[in-house]
Length: 397
Ligand code: GLN
Image 1 (cartoon, rainbow, N blue to C red):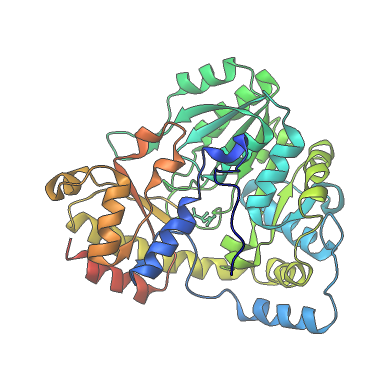
Image 2 (cartoon, rainbow, N blue to C red):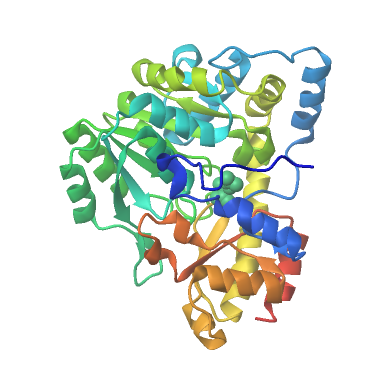
């Protein structure tokens, strides 16, 4: 017998009550229940480099199973510094500049909790990965959204005036994600230069989530930290999950100047103390010896992108073909209207139950939820055969 529950009302704190349960857990559970092909939560259905997987077993067998140093094992920090230097980053000292975290999601949380005081302004582009909003709420930060909307060429852009207005509120920090989830936008040099200029002018710190940096299909990934005046005021985040297709390993990192690193570590030490030790050793091997394998991954996913986007267009969706990353955003309103459905959740419910494909309703990626209702996000970070199977099912739409 389970004990009777005497507490009948929700016990969730005010900080988190509005967020409910994350859309990723919900959609993946629905995909399993309906035996649908899961293109909702962004995780690969294939493995990263074999040498990295073997190194994990070896690390565990060699007794590297106790706490890692709080800031991360030296090899991982070296590897992350090497990764950071790619795409126009700068040379940094791994000892003072790099902190290993439990995936990028913890890096985001540690950064916000370590850096922001209650009431501090935080500029974010919406749509954004849902943990940004929840973590900002935990830190007591005040979100200042700037909206990315498709222009006539189908590219997601923001208005310079909106960004200037956001900075006029004297934000403590801006949180930027480039390449961007869920739109696949790669922020251009001109856009990054404007952000950098405003950061310097308003003495604002930049937090950049760059976990999709190796997956650019068109354009060029540029690190904000590499722009003039930004090295000292930028915290750059990355992870092994996306770089080497091992999202379950939960190994990520934050690269930042020593005063910002102190802020990140001040929270990280009490959140998790350290990231998974054997996985850090194995991830380090991949970073130091196998960064070249990401090129093959990029080519495979680009092929998937094209196959899936073509099928979604045939199904009648307005497709915003992404320049990078794992995901494609579409406008479903034409198809929804035909089917008598209203909103992203209803459309995704139909897809998962009737078509056998799970996609993500992205309104929880918007601070102003209503802006996301017309969109749907599909992931193509899968084996080619998985995308082929999904394409076959989508023909029924
Ligand atoms: N970042 C991934 C996505 O957007 C998944 C993150 C998660 O499951 N929490 O799909």
